[in-house]
Amino acid sequence: MVLIKNILLWASKNDWTSQKLPKYRFIQKSLSRFMPGESLLEALDACNNLENTNYGTIITYLGENVTSENQSNGVTNHYLNALSEIKNKSLGTLISIKLTQLGLDFSKTTCITNMKKILDKANELNTIVWIDMEEYKYIDKTLDIYKYLSNYYSNIGITLQSYLYRTNDDLFKLLDFALYIRLVKGAYVESESVSIKDRDLVDNNYIDLSKIMLNKKNLSKGFKPSFATHDDLIIREIVNEANKNAIDNTLYEFNMLYGIRPKLQNEILKSNQNIKILISYGEEWFPWYMRRLAENPKNLFLLLK
Ligand code: FDA
Image (cartoon, helix red, strand yellow):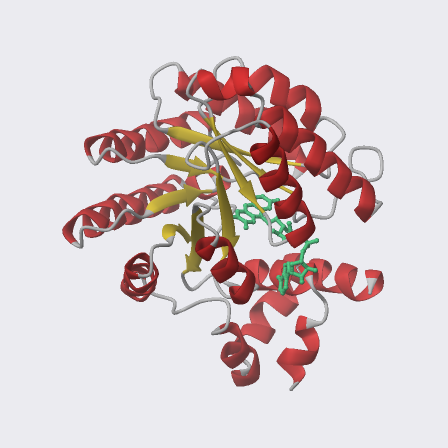
């Protein structure tokens, strides 16, 4: 399983596989389970259906590591238009962005300028913007930009990964000022020197971090944690922790990915917990799809079927 996972993660970064594999019909067909469509309107239609059944929604436009100012401006305009469409359709959908999609690889200034445009527009709509966390080499820069933008905007959230040794320290620093933190396990290949390799230890770290995030002192400052996981055991631990400490279930939420463990999503919704579903869309789906397959190599059998 570890070998399959590593091959999938390698394929997500390889130029040859990225060009060839997306053209195969069977790969495109299997994708529909995880992505309602490539276009913004297909994503928002799916959000509409989900919101009609009381799920919250988040969208993310796929594509990472843009290499020019033009591309960064294009992605920014895409998100500005997405926010207008969300408003026109009276949806509560939030957006979630990767900073390398806004130019983090070549210009911090371009990235910040474009993030500000998106945050200004989101502010008008009274909605928050999530920042995804990418590979290890981007973490310091991402946190610096998040911290800088937090001086001017309160409608901004950041993602932390429980598979990293450093996350405990990062969390404590962020809790001084952050209002929205989303905790994930982490989806990239990282070296042993920085990331925990044992899955049980990653899970234990997730639980430890979630308990810190659910601390009443933090919640009383207006901090709202989001727990992004499909791990039912972790979800149960979090709900138990909240119940034990009489924490109202409006003070935290769960996030899951479209198409992953829909039965569990429904159970969480039915148990009166807040849950948002993140929908990814766009033509640049290949690396993202490989990462989703790698999260559960059993998906490969589904694809082959
Ligand atoms: P785990 O991988 O242990 O899965 C728990 C169970 O869920 C599995 O046993 C399986 O049954 C099921 N499952 C999980 N993934 C599956 C899949 N792809 N297909 C089928 N079944 C699956 N990562 C990151 O590094 N940076 C980020 O910014 C984000 N952002 C983000 C936002 C949101 C809303 C979510 C839900 C996730 C992310 N992630 C992320 C991805 C995250 O790091 C992680 O890779 C996945 O959520 C899978 O981990 P789980 O916590 O679900 O646990």
